[in-house]
Image (cartoon, rainbow, N blue to C red):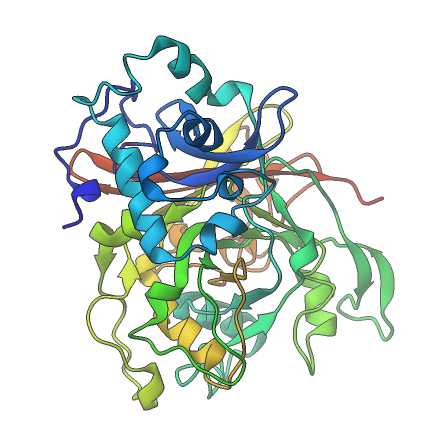
Amino acid sequence: MNKTNSPDLKSWVNIPAGSDFTIQNLPYGIFKYGIKKPRVGIAIGEHVLDMSFLYRKGYLDNLFLNENVFKGRTLNRFIALGKAYWNLTRNRVCELLQEDNTELRNNKVDLKFALIPLTEVEMLLPVQVPNYTDFYSSIEHATNIGKMLRPDNPLLPNWKHIPVGYHGRASSIVISGTNIHRPKGQTKPEGTEKPVFGPSKSFDFELEMAFIIGRGNEMGASISTADAEGHIFGMLIFNDWSARDIQAWEYVPLGPFLSKNFASNVSPWVVTMDALEPFKCAGPEQDTPVLPYLLFDGEKNYDIHLEVYIKTEKGDSTLICESNTKYLYWNVAQQLAHHTVNGCNMQIGDMCASGTISGPTPNSYGSMMELSWRGANPITLNDGSERKFLQDGDTVIMKAFCKKGDIKIGFGEVVGKILPAI
């Protein structure tokens, strides 16, 4: 086990019970504090550790880094340094925060500037995303959607042979807390001969996790399942907003377009693959033989617990879904191997989302489309109201965390409120 993952580690920083941001986590984000320019931070307890300040004051001198990697509006410059530097930085920060280390703890002047309360900072989009791909990796989700649209043939013939995906819109990926306007577009209501135009009436969330590319590949080269995790910097929560009625009309023959490209919210903290290593687990049995490039050794799924809440304008919040990334049929190594098997060149900061993560039970379905079964079984919220799909004024909150014993590795949350169409 990497020493930074040890359950015995304790920090001198006060970390409340149940905190997502333990010393075993140390996720990266981009924050803005007061009039200062954006910079790289690491979450610890209820604070953000200012990496730019630590560098300037000499706490990171032994890492042989450039000052600029911790400055700016994205993590891309730091990510570009590669896995060896990710590990060195993680080890050094973990060392500084351990309970028996006095370097920073006893320097009261530096401590005041190095540790900033999370409540006082503004979190920004953590990476510049050159390209975005959305997969369709949950067999439960694919089967559920198929049952609604194609009852006689719910799972298409190619689904168990390839990790299905499509290229989405990188420019409309926005940080948690960004409000989302209900999209407009063409729909074709049942019983009508011609399409109509207007705001979506079947507005939905999709519970997903995304990984961020930390090392690219040359055009024409491929990334194997064995090497894939070395190309991934970390993961975050991803809410892929969807207009189901627009999607139903447009998706034949080329798949999603306007129903998906208008907005996706992501959580501000990127949890590194090193932090997630202790939570690797086996995925579902792949009962259909795959081609050699999709074969893999060992455990490639992750035991990440997922939750979705709907908060109404009255302020009531209802837990409507509990799922887990371990349910994904296609794991991240297979997703990346398939993405590049044709020679597609990945770039640093590229984001690949899992697709909706649904589990085997109705309460684990990762979208309103499934939870209400396309509106046939409305969900009753805690305030007594019902939902077939999302309404204007609803706020969707997604949370994700791993837990083993007393150790918790959390992603924080991704929040988005729905505003009326413009």
